Length: 475
Image (cartoon, rainbow, N blue to C red; front, side, top):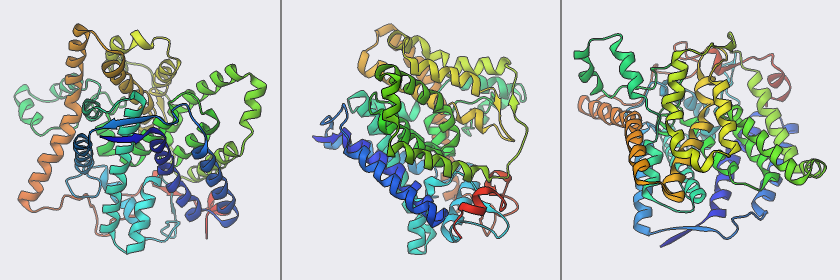
């Protein structure tokens, strides 16, 4: 039997977020910013690590053979996502591979002489540093795969710590939990094609979460296979922020997420505000204000200010506003979220975090920000994750009646089609690449740089005349 310390999991999770942010601060900002902010971050991390928490001494236990199986499945899952470029990759990897290449092969801060790289690239920095040290893109790709497996393993075991047990079923739910996308996709496809074409098309395992665009609640597998760089760090960060207590260090942990996951960061902001209000009510407002005047919170302000100014140098622009609610919006809410409410509300109808995240999702899903739909699709990640956690809790902690369990299994099986298609498509396309001796890696040009004309866009570029680039960017 292997015993895993919950405290050790939380420390590893904090360090997993801290290291890339430290690399960014040192590699992208001038010394008069990098030195004091790095020291503040190290001090805040040290205080957080040395602090006592409610789960002091708590452990979760798992048989060694089961642990090996779990780690093997987690590793295979991450490999199949395309991270590391060892299997076929989804289209979004065109841009992610190019950004990663530039972080490996170009000097930091990354620039083409006209524009700087301005993107949420924090997740790649440790692996890119390995690539620089070894002078090898292959070494960086392997390091990125290892870093990603470590991140998803931490996420899984932090969930197990939250549920107080390690079960293989939790891992299966993590991989295959999703809203029901199949019905919407069938309607979407049949409105444009003949019925006779449907079955051959489904055997190609298409990406079926586009049917209600711009509304989408991506499964964990979809997020891993398409936008891993912002998803994996947020998965870990949210699990560190969920347990009650320890408010003193939560703003600092939360601040670290901005470099990786700006949209989920915004989506979780109302939840952080809700926790702050509850803390202030419990401690009293004067005591809460005194406890908030800490070095840890100063470090949090410094991180958010620096990263925020970095993002403000981005040249992306576009119309912003609210989309009017329509049938697709209601269908999206029903099939992605409301369908799970009958199974979780019995134990959680008074949970302020559930309703805060749901309200945030209701509003932010209607917000149009810039040229893409990313704000709508990514600010709802916190609610999707929390709903998944509540379903896990109902199954493995509080218990569920036989009839409701059967209904839940039906819903879960219908939802599982989405992540199954993501996995099956990768396997199918990888087999095709091997059979045809094609390269699985998504590579659009020989340079494979984000500054290539076929890849670059305003959401990747920073202005030289921005406040960050003029006064804070390392020269």
